[in-house]
Image 1: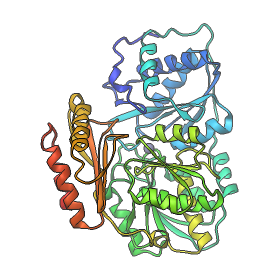
Image 2: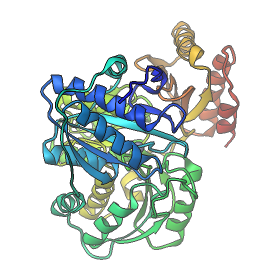
Image 3: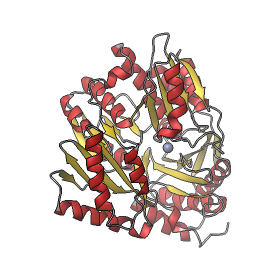
Image 4: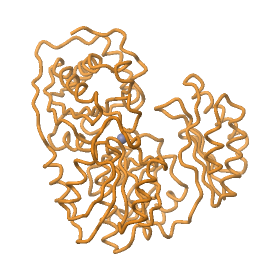
Length: 468
Ligand SMILES: [Zn+2]
């Protein structure tokens, strides 16, 4: 095996390793990363890792290369084949592996792929990924190789869910799998539970011929919204490419943002665990904090990032953690990691236990007008400097708002709130603006726009979002 001293540091990102296939991410490099990772974990006492891969065309080869690299380090590898990310997490837990690697490009464009790495079920991320990068440059194979074995766990996973959930007859849902990993798992799962399901784009296809699998993007969910509005479905669910994020559509075809779904989960779980802690990220609506308190829970605000909320969940013993992006981790009664299928089933369980419609779950939450998450292009060099400047601008003049600078700058006003932060995964700032009505959203949007106009960024996407 030859080492690749040109292993690009840029693919080691904050939450995962990600790159363009055959450009900066190649099978030999994946093997080298597997070796570096294996040596690191072996030195801590790890002996077995589980490896799975998504449906992208490069994923089987990368899965093979990862397994080979881990074996080079003396780690035994259980290969579970093509699976959604939550099934990999579940397998690590179920098999008692020391960790896992999921080969997935998630919702990213067709030419991307990446690696999500866990120790146990907890992500390896941030500074540790940077350390791993350095170690990969000099990694040497161990004297004794590990062994590879294959294991099909799908039936065991399905059984764990059918043991956990039961539903009355007559539930019918529509789903959009976006040609990602969801179809082959969620369709049999719903069927086993007696839930009738109509699916859009269920066939896995790594060329994503219909739309990229990202339920957070309203235009990608339009076909599902229309389908649900026209049919007699209790609701609809969209899944991202690797099925660790869920999107909910109510029975009228209206997209419900994931922060509100998180609040519905919080209210439900807090009835079982009064005083429980709930983690939510800075992109969530202001109503979350108040809603959790009203339901008798303890709200905990977190920086954005599925790795961060999971770590915070472990630290605080929270019963639930979630993000606006649709990563929702159910601790109480769940596995504590982001499983979009579990989230879909819990949604249906809450509806059927209350004998209410999907929209009823959100009926008492005041209607707000908000932008989706707006991506504002900025160079990597300027990204964090711009955020520093924005924090300074608003600290100097909060314009009557309350400031939180945990992750970027968030300002809450009486009539709404705004957030500007640096994306950890792309060369963008991300902004979100919400008002109690359109006028309030425009008012706050103008404040954001004015502040950003002083900076080297492209504010066209913000202008566009405020017009819609
Ligand atoms: Zn994902």
